[in-house]
Image 1 (cartoon, rainbow, N blue to C red):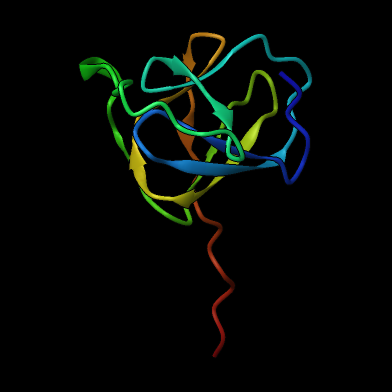
Image 2: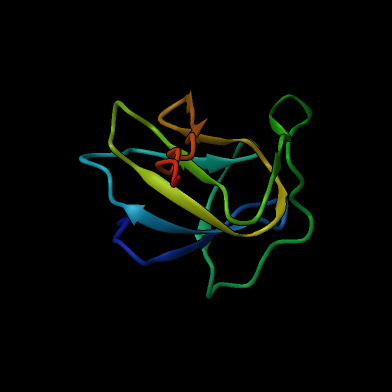
Length: 101
């Protein structure tokens, strides 16, 4: 699996995401307990997110993994917790804008 900046991926719960920052090295990227697929490939409707990893992914949210450096941007909402090499990816906090007086 080659995760390049700008590449588009799809999870089993219908979520789609774009790679913002590529990882140093990743063996597996999963959504809902199943490996992600390139967005250009047809989705397998028989696969559903596993119950224990079925968080809702909202459009415009960024998820990151500090250990690998991977950062993803959700481009289509869906279900399926994002995991990298077995680690759950955390929601990246937004940066506060400076106050204008």
